[in-house]
Length: 119
Length: 119
DNA sequence: AGTATGTGTAAGTATTTACTTACGCAAGTT
DNA sequence: AACTTGCGTAAGTAAATACTTACACATACT
Image (cartoon, rainbow over all chains, first blue to last red; front, side, top):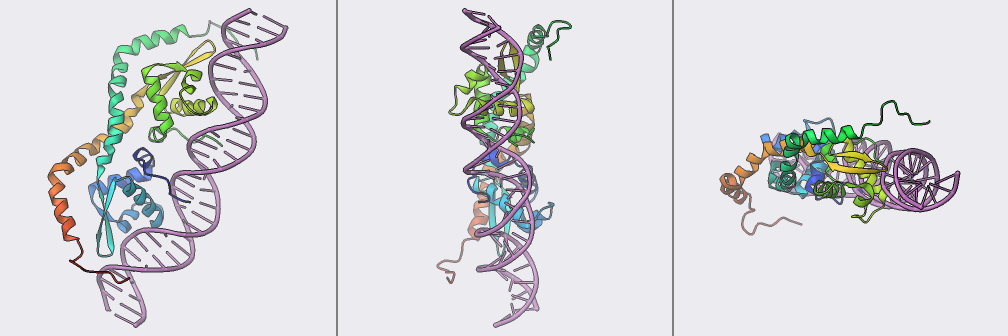
């Protein structure tokens, strides 16, 4: 039951190996053996990761003779980008404007001096 | 062994429930029961998701009496944002400049007219 | 003090993940 | 035609995930 129900971009990029595959393929399209050469795992393992990446559209395969070149096609990253972007403002504003406010609140929560919980 | 070795932001946002939690908490900080009310799953399940989110810093907990308010603190999303951003140019340029080139290549790969594979 | 409320966490479970090795097949080479 | 190369995929496995129910415990309320 390995590698079945997976077509989600968020899931796809959750795995560090897959992120690395993307990084390599963006730099230079390459066939599966070449790709697998960069990792400390078996060729089939990489093949399975690539499958997932193609299933969610982040990689496309160009068959050339018996070789299959993997190319990056990162448009789907837009989904993630958009999700992040909607919060960007939030966290950037938090950083300066609300910083002092938050600190204040936090101080109100400090336990009374020398107070002890009974064990 | 539920929910152990997890502190990675990419992993954290890979789960749709956790993404939804973030969405809710950004709009309005709320305690765990209120939060859990939005989902079709048990309160402990949400508690565990929140734990993961706090562990990678996307949510902070403000204890108020017996309640624990969850607030979003999305700075860590920067890690994801940065990763995506480095590729943004790539996929945006691909969209126009390379589009025609890719189409051309693709056509070169079309099997010869009426060519058939033996079965 | 006794009860209700808000919550963390342990233990159990089904499913999914991320690998592995073994095998099979098509495309090129000799 | 036989051999090599490049690759997909099946089957097996250990670990991680995402839940659940049961329980413990502190804070508040009466």
